[in-house]
Length: 108
Length: 373
Image (cartoon, rainbow over all chains, first blue to last red; front, side, top):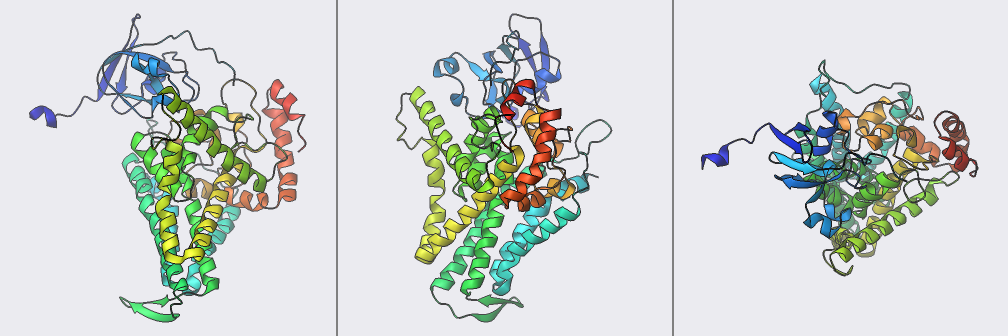
């Protein structure tokens, strides 16, 4: 019962799978903006959930999607746990897998 | 400082309420919304040389109060609904040949019944202020989940619920490219653009939904189709105006939608006219800023397009001058110029020449050469 009234922590930890990189996300902030704020070279392009460049795979933990990922990601990708970092607000400590080498811009 | 930063964005809510009260008072007051629009054009023109930077405290934090600004934006939905209801009320009176007499309510005099002339004033007022719903529909289309639905509902009052999806998934991705219907190529006038941009964005939204549903193995003819759902959101407005005034009601609602959508597309036209993007990410140079002081406050910083398109996730009160292409005047002043295409073409030529010289990449310059100013 008391858990119901307990405030969630102000920060959540984000760990990048298969690397030793980690950073914090302030409650309510997006995964992408926090990563960029922490100096992580996360791939991105539009920041509004339309290009898919910032996609990553949620390995562990919970996020709240801000927009429907279904316009950009395939159903199979969503089933595998792929999310858009710019439209994901962590709701717990999370572990994600992202290819930080995919930062070159492509086409339009 | 906090009060000043937050209160300056309340011009539209305040003036929208005045426009509503004007229609309720009737008589010549039905034209108040039109008069305010003219007054704003004057203020915008007189203050065109005042440009202010965004305000931050010593630690770099914005003075904007998110809960307040979001509450205002959410509360604008019932305000815009009220704008339609009072117009429908006047149409009902006109259609019923209600006698034009002065009545009193709580000591305030108002005119019952309405003349055809003043009904035109009420309709144009409603259209102009409904059109300003775009500034909230736009802001809420970004950022947060709950706001997205409110954005759709606000835009649906103008028959443009498709805008919310088209803006995020088309305009922000394809800006400055021929795949973006909201970017006006050089040589196009505002009247042609309004039609092509509106239809192009609606078409995009339909295809987007078709593809999303196909991924799920569903047909496009589905209540889950958000393009169809968007138009269904407009149904209560249609029912209200048909009930209130039959043919007159339909004509009035059609006029409101035409005016509102024209204003929406005018903002798209002014924000990106003639700018070109070949490859790579959207940069500051792919938008025009209109950030004179009155435009910034009135349009809740929607004129800071250069910053917005690079930091689409940023709240409007945090957007700043990034020294991108800038017309140097406000939206009201520029809007008047765009209404006269030959005048706009002359006006914009020096700005486009400047853009080609200072901002365009080599590839963008090559494309620009194919267009006449």
